[in-house]
Length: 107
Image 1 (cartoon, rainbow, N blue to C red):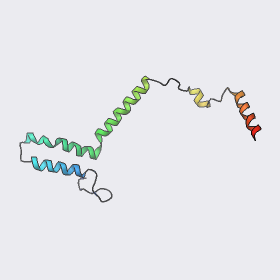
Image 2: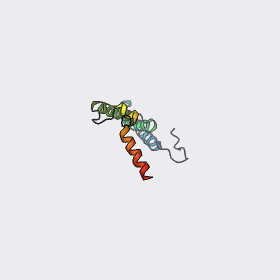
Image 3: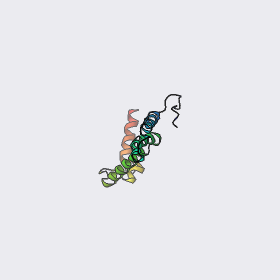
């Protein structure tokens, strides 16, 4: 956790945040307990580095807003389910015959 060593043996990504919190704690340990809240933002930064909860919540909110916007404005020229399943070829036998005929003449 706060050992300072990452997976590859170097400094971990969150160790600078941990050092910053410890420095804040040492500086503020002799003050009034009400004023020890000075280190809360630094501690939150360290926890965010470890767990990415705020970042994940922000990503979920963005995805939700994107889905809501997509639902509010459906695509104008969206293909129908039938044309997707048939790739647009069902009911076009004449065109298919012409394409096959042209391909056989080229060969």
